[in-house]
Image (tube, rainbow, N blue to C red; front, top):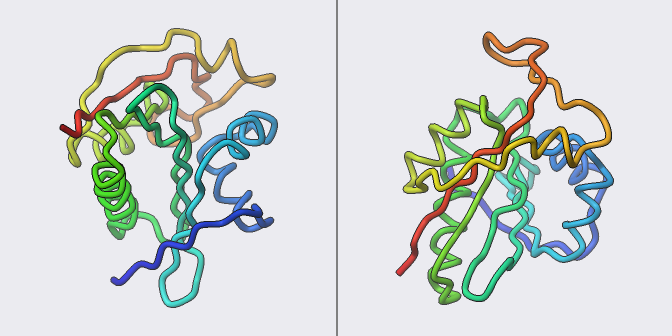
Length: 158
């Protein structure tokens, strides 16, 4: 699969659908997306993913949103996007790359660790403190589980 990465300045409706798959609050997405560098990920000119990167501290870059279209999941696209963003962060001379996910987002945690991220801390009550509505997990055995904590992962690039 040969993915194409296209930086976008204007977020389309299709982009929002993907962004909101990864982060259910449009208000929160809007708060960080305008400060982020956003790439649409295309395969044969079809939107298959999106990723948003945000400098958070000196020499630190965070992947604040990454999503793969539901019908394109489990094909390795998420891993390819992460590998591309890791390479981009290294070439831009960042020291650290960060990412966060829900404490019971086991598939994401597996992928992030597989590409080299390490768990660094738990942001307790992140979802209950920052989201206007409960974030309810709807996967695996956690159907109906209210998400509370975010797991933060870090990768040293140098």
